[in-house]
Amino acid sequence: MQQPVSLKSAERKAFQATFADGLWDVMIGCVFLMFAVAPLLSESLGDFWSSVIFLPFWGLVYLAIWLTRRYVVAPRIGKATLGKPRQRRLVNLGFLMVIINILLLLIGMLAVFIFPSVSGFLMAVILGVVLLFGFSAAAYFLDYPRFYLYGLLLFAAALVGEWLYQNYGVSHHGYPLCYGFVSGVMIVTGLVTFRRLLKDNPLVELPVEAA
Amino acid sequence: MSEPRAKPELHPLVDIDPIIHAQGRLMILTYLYVVESADYVFLMRLTGLTWGNLATHLNKLEEAGYIEIQKKFEGKKPKSLLRMTEDGRKAFRAYKNNLKQVLDDLPE
Image (tube, rainbow over all chains, first blue to last red; front, side, top):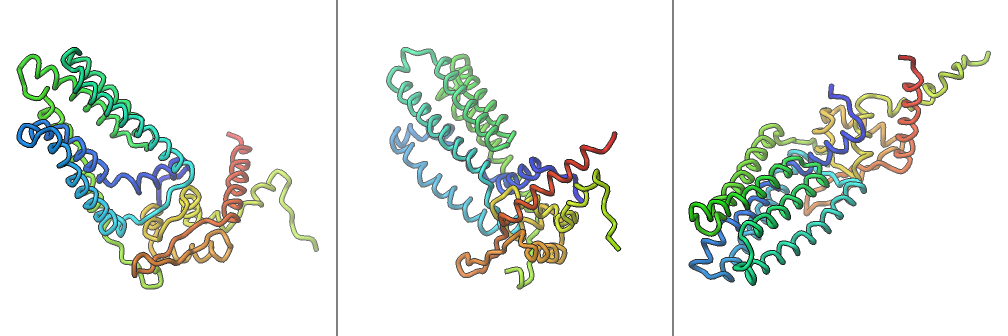
């Protein structure tokens, strides 16, 4: 009927069924789209408005994902509330992500105030390591191996962007090119995963007594 | 006349709960053991059972007191959530330990 189940694999399967719909990839891809587009927008809108404009954009993306989960994904794969061990892991990951975001904010401020005196490569390495660490932690806590790859891609994007900037004069430290590529990879991966989910899980019509 | 008794070394096998031991119910309980609650669609997807099979197994598990079905509303739509009871968790742990003991004691 099915492959043999162990409690551990069953728990992982149950968790991934609620998590691996590809929409997280799309959401995170849209977040990193800011790294690619913000430097370009800052030329016309200024630093402040180029950052602020992303808040409604992310809000819309989040709303679209929430609605898609509720009206498209849930009727196909169902809903489950995670067990306590998994909830604890998510809380731990949440704390870690707060720390990483504070670190990223500090790096950003550092870059603004003392960037001229610090090697561009050093800043790129610091940013890349923080992103790699964050995504590796997320991959570990969420049992989501694809995040290791995203972490590596973001680490490489920081370094390659700086290298392109210093050697070929690519604009904005190569951010639009490199982070554009990585966010594109995330969004496309997410959409392909989502499409596969729709294909593999047709809508289930339950009889009235199931309500 | 007294009933035939199992040999002492087979006692754990006798203790295996027949309600849990059926393949479909074992799959259902395995998934409900690792989540707090789940709906029908979620269980159908993960176990591969049809609605008819799932409903039959769920009825037996509910009668045994191993699961409870909570009815609630999501907006205007009724929604049922399935949850393993504390008795169900105890029975599942006992089943797991008994089965493990039986299998561990088997010679290679």
